[in-house]
Image (cartoon, rainbow, N blue to C red; front, side, top):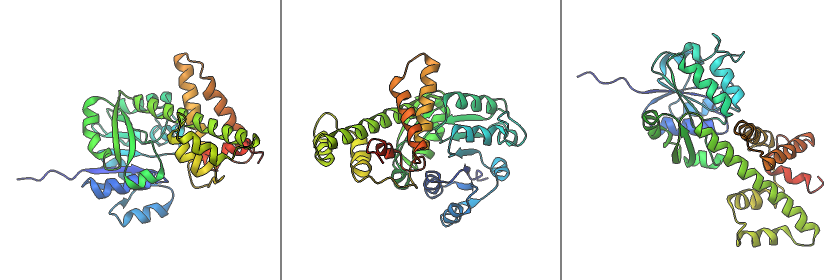
Length: 301
């Protein structure tokens, strides 16, 4: 009896979040995993877990499902549709064939997501948007949260693979629904971080130690993930490392939310104010620091 061919997965972009996700796929899925990145160091580490370094061309030729973990929607469109963003011959889409599937784990705008899905559909290639939520620590532990935008049958096919690196997987709806959930999650998160930054500065100047303030908030109705993870761990100690989710990335995600709000006719004044705050932080030289570094604006630093 002929044995079925082993599943081959591709993974393009093994950076801060992509590397641990790729590792979990390789060690838990039972599939052969091919990975590509401009940086050789994570590929060398992943090789110890059975991941094969490959070119985009090799991944397109061998993988039935290809995961993308890239810095922005613009990067996703460039990789899939070519340098000019128009489904050129240098893009991944031009190298794919009917029956393959692309899964975008990046955070992309809704417009870009729909454009990429359309470009792939012209090649009879299926697409799902599955942006990841939670932290690098969660990626390392395999406990990310992932909302997925895809047709129901494709979601059923992808869910076991995504569960190799996520503890919470949600079918959010059709293509682009995953991105809607993710960018609104980040909008709410960082609007809360902004409120915490303002509260810490106001409290300090009014004579209340921010530690006391945050302890009180954690026991009241203002308790939140943002308080426990960004307030206590970053804003209080004023610790904003550069190798973490930076101000520039947070700005990108919230700007996607502002664009989506305009698309559906909502005046997202809080999100617009947040983007302006991120712009001020970037102008002050904090763009590559951990996103709660916006608190430095209120501390006069």
